Image (cartoon, rainbow, N blue to C red; front, side, top):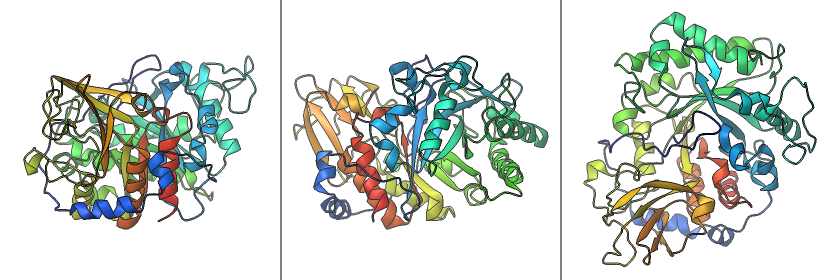
Length: 452
């Protein structure tokens, strides 16, 4: 997952691992074409519509990531309201809490999290933070957001691509797991942030999400071992145990989710059927598949829904969301425990020849692995295409020989309908600041997640 260790750092564009072997699901292109026929014209055109807060109407889960560092580029919690995105979300995940050297939960940027004063123009409630108030920063804005939208769940995500380096060590012993989980609950559930008044952040977070990238894999150059696999299950069990204890005697249920790899060779190492006893669901990171690790191409879809039979990769190296879901289910994961993931950004390649069809698809490149937000991609020149087999758009600019893989209102609507067809839990998106100012992607995905 793209992430950053501080609010002033640029996000990393990270593809988690080389292509991994997995069994191929032969899905007819007609299935995608049939889905495409059901997309409303407004979704295809990207026309946003105001919607009511969802969550109690039987719709699916819609989890949106809000980045800690987004405020440095002017994306505040208030933007979720002005864009209309907030009305579609059932859950907002805050990225990221970190792991301290002593194996306890910690803030990766205290200023952004709870110290930085917001002006009246920046704040959710339209009032400037006061000097000396108990809580400021993003956390206070999340509290104001929750007061305005009480059905919205807010979850603290811990780890991320650049923040997973200490998981392996802390999870090795029962004592280490207990201490880590207890510190996370103290800070984010009970609201006892070190250096602040007792319970200053109480009542903001409705649960925790573990984003360990990845057990028994180096990820971003992290320590790892085979023992990570059972330790990961034990860590999630410890989270579930302590979260349940924190809710004892109340009518609350604290959410526990985990972000997991889409590649079967990574996910297949996990004790999937066992660990799903402890989580409410898994956010399977079905994006970043082709891009940063293929700088010379071939150009391909970074988050295709179905396979395209023209894909030049050998079948064992091909990827699509349908294959991933099938694999997870084959490992004993119930559909209701799976949420697919949708990117609000584009991967793009340069030095791409037009190829026989003149569209740059499945062609070699001289440079790739770069990303930009969807709201930036929409302003780039080029011809937009839609692949009915993959259920995914792409853009090619012949003048600059640039190829873009991304999601559009049409493709996210297809993915929402796929969630319904397969009986999945919902969808997660990374990240909310990547959408347009009028929330086109979120509006299209929200509609499809509310209505089968």
